[in-house]
Image (cartoon, rainbow, N blue to C red; front, side, top):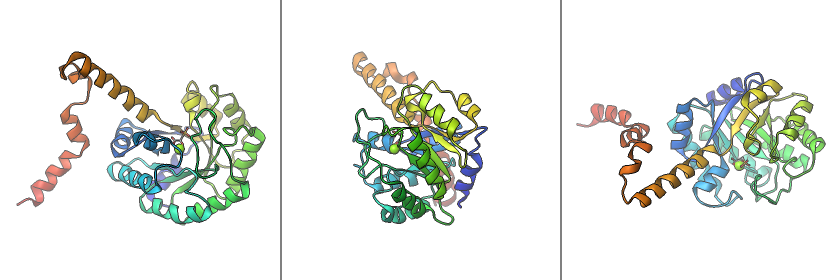
Length: 288
Ligand code: SPV
Ligand code: MG
């Protein structure tokens, strides 16, 4: 297991869940780490949104992998890579995950939907799941010595298959060697998630993405003593979109850029985020 995976595993504490913040590029990953989040969520939804395309297996895995590598390179929080369906079947997974391992990610999250996937939160999206045995094979293919943690994600609740099926799948995925099970829901209240968590036997920690039911606080999740990781699924891209829209509208409305000056990051701040101090050290040492 890599150093990043070890650190993440140690933080999957059901009494005090780790909190991951989403990112869509290296800069947002760096800001998430700077803010103090325990991990960075390499979100497929965010990356798709950043390319202005749907989160439906449209971007290539190379695009996603390059984004994960860039996130790993610029900050120290463990990166949890959202590999969607793993690119196809267990063979695809067996070739894909070593590349994510080489990029230095701490964990991969793989979901039990069919390829190509549709976004879980999309109203009336296509939510078909692969057979349990097939997904167990994909989990086994994802597990490599010294590689990232494997977080198996079941979409049984998203697909409307009910709690019993979600529990059956979660247990089967833990049996196949998953380090944690992500249980996703798009209900606007946390009821079905709370019920699932209470029923979960606790063989491996759970992972939640509470986008659809935002009123469930981190403290309430911790009180369940079943969840090792809470993922803030898409808050970086939504914050960026809101901030850009507000800034762009103000500039056009006011006919100049002066009015937004103290509401946006300074140029000095951006230089710092680019690692300007490191470049100055390099210049001082090597430029002759
Ligand atoms: C993502 O952020 O890409 C996720 C979470 O997988 S969700 O969009 O809720 O499916
Ligand atoms: Mg995703």
